[in-house]
Amino acid sequence: MARKRNAENKGLPARWQHHHGAYFYRVPPGLEALWDGKKRFRLGANLPEAYRTWADRLGTLDAAANIGELLDRYALEVVPTKATTTQTQNQIAINRLRKTFGAWPLSAIEPHHIYTYVDARTKTIKGADGQPLKVKARTAAMREIEVLSHAFTMAVQWGFMKRHPFAREVRLAGEKPRDRYVEDWEIEACLSIKSKRKKGSVLAAQAYIRLKLLTGMARGDLLRLPLPDFNAEGIEIKRHKTAKSTGKRTLYLWTETLRAVVLDAIAARPNARSPWLFCNRRGECYVNEQTGRAGGWDSLWRGFMDRVMSETEVTVRFNEHDIRAKVASDAETVDHARALLSHTSIDTTKRIYRRKAERVSPLERKD
Image 1 (spheres, rainbow, N blue to C red):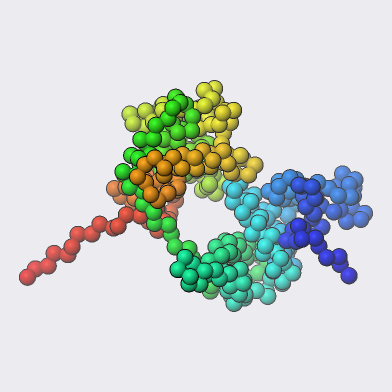
Image 2: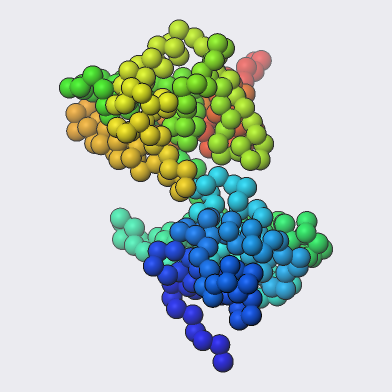
């Protein structure tokens, strides 16, 4: 009888262990020579690193006997092509999916199982008015189903099965797109905050807001801007989120205003020798490429917004994504908005980022 896995190891591939802050592979007896002579081989400190090491050692799988093995191959071949943050989110989703579906044959899953899975993860809580509100964990469950669905799409591509078992047969009510529109006067209020220092967080946040309002760049792209990337024509970027897929590049042409904002951002840096346009006191990029997170910048932004809420007439917080949406909403045409945000699909721009009411002239009728 197989030994029951410890709680911290549930959802991990077979023979994996999480021990003292790292992931290990328990080598099957007799195969130690393939794993540097070790009985327990260290894979990495985090899941993306562990899966990369595992992939290097094992290569790819040739077939999948069950959903767990399909998810293993998906983790090895597909997940590493995504952005770092997305990789981490996908690995968490895969771990949760494996707990429920890991032992299932590929042909066993049906559309009703997807509904059951999401319903089981959706817990009822009470809203502010005391009425039941089914929201808790539903969003996470839907993200997990997105991963599972894509894994089955790849299963068809890899020849494991002839058709996707639930594509276009499941209709889950998605999240309502955020509709917060940041008004011009709210931006003016943010830029009116006074700083006692000539450099630092307030001036950096204000320069960041002004640069985002001009370009619509995503946070990850703005925080990764290195000064050498500025050329004679303008600021050229490759969207970090899609660098490994579409490889889309955007060149924001120089204007007097754009040059002035960049100079303000350079002057606001706490470390003048840093190669990054936005940097911490040590001159380092705010984004940790191992995790894809920017904890230092998140703290700076929260502190700045605390001051906005306490020192101005702004009463409803907004996030950086809302500023990006303001750019798309204020652009004269949806195609200009799409280009500014470096979107490949205009549908995404219209559905999520254009938040102003659509302006329509009344129909003129002849009496």
